[in-house]
Length: 227
Length: 120
Image (cartoon, rainbow over all chains, first blue to last red; front, side, top):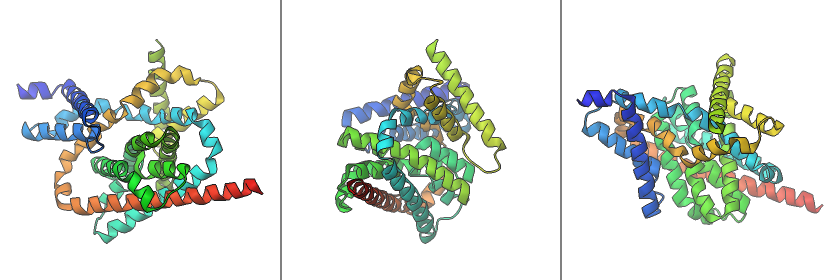
């Protein structure tokens, strides 16, 4: 009976949609970054798989269907960049400077800190794209031979931490420029951080979304050249 | 009808991106090539912004849901997480601070330089 249900791709699809909907609901009710819908959905599904002893391969029959949409979703990032083209034009130099410097700092610090804490391959490759927006990060991780689930986990951790800590970091580093705030949030903590940037102001949010697409592209280019 | 056209267009564009990626002499994600193609198509005016509105709105609204399966795969690697979660968390948080600092300061310097150049 259990096998009959879980062998159907619809099992993976429905449990994903239901868990994510529950995550969205919990996030709306509490309004707390730590109740990230993606995080909640993942914890719920992992719990169900472990409790009912369902193999990942069964879940992934449906999971793969949902995962397939990552390609078109990444392509659609072009739509957001195009929509904000005026903002991109007026701050192009600053956005480029911030995202290039930030992406390089992210990669170097991850390699250095990994060595310091005794983390080896393939974990380093999994961590490398963790500041970048999810669809791009998964693509980079896969092309470097990383473990994509670890990439998503560390990426979520970074995003949620960025979301919560952004106001603190702005104070700590004495950032007094709104463009700098937006670029730093988007470059360091992708979409999850950007939702905080949007709360801080529409202009900061827009700059942050541009920065996250730019830093994704730049990180992919660096990964391509350097590894 | 609009949505069917948008979806098939996006799927074909992604396929083209993956095809280009597979023949490249270096590794670069095909989905990003598809993104560049779409940007070129939008800038050239072949496809208008409004012609993508429905699918773009839907996917950006529920984007995070499509990342769930990739993250759930962690059940296959629980052992790694159990043995090395402390260094993984430490690396993630410390590099977040470094990245944030460097990005913010680079923008402040760049803004300063452009402001100076404008006033001259």
